[in-house]
Structure formats: C-alpha cells, structure tokens
Length: 147
Image 1 (cartoon, rainbow, N blue to C red):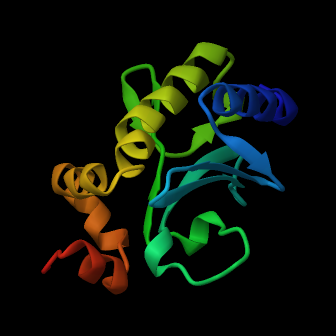
Image 2: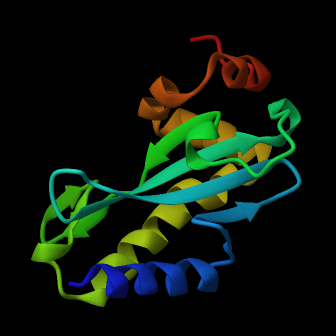
C-alpha cells in the first residue's frame, strides 16, 4: 500500500470517529482529557506506528497543543494482521483498507473512549496494567495510583 493511501485511510477514519486534525496530530478531547494520536514512520522499514498520548488537563500547564509524546499516559495502537497483533503496520504487506480501519476503531474503543472520563481512565489503567509503565509519576499521583 502506498503511504499516501494509508494516511488518507487513517485521516478519514479518525475524522469520522470524532477526532480533529491540527498540524500532524489528531485530537479528541473531553473536559478532563486530551487524547493525541500521531503517526510515526519507522526508520527501518515501510512501517507505521500510531502513537497515543493521553493528557490530563488539570496537570498539563502548557498553553500549546500537546503532542503524543507530551501525554501523561502513552501507548500505541495495535493492528490485527491475519492472526497476529502488531504495533507497526508494514505497508508493504498490507493491501486491505479494512485491516487499518478495524484496528483503528478497536484502539479508539479500547483506549481513547474510556480515557475521556476520569473514571474511565482509572478503569483503563486497571484493565491494561502495562500502561502504568508509560504513565508519569504526576499522573499516578493525580489519579491516586500507589504503584
């Protein structure tokens, strides 16, 4: 698949699912949280990551729009290719739009939508404990996580 086609599919899917695009990042926010998605091209192959940054507004004191790397909680979307879960989608090995769309929508459903509410964010971190490794100390303190 061509890079341009991939980016078009991602753009249409994210905009359809309530994200706004500003610059090279996609944003979805609630009164409490800003979720930022960014595409990252691998330096080693024709492979893309979808990086996630979850920014808690009450502890984010920067006036500019955050980037995915500014997230208090960071993650990546996974793509389901055949019977495998991969975090870097190799465009040389994919030619079905549905793989991209269904994987993006799964990431939105599993990570982004729960994170938009304080209670949902707490539940997300309980359900996906691995996210605690990519959660800042200040975010853990704010959420009352003692790990």
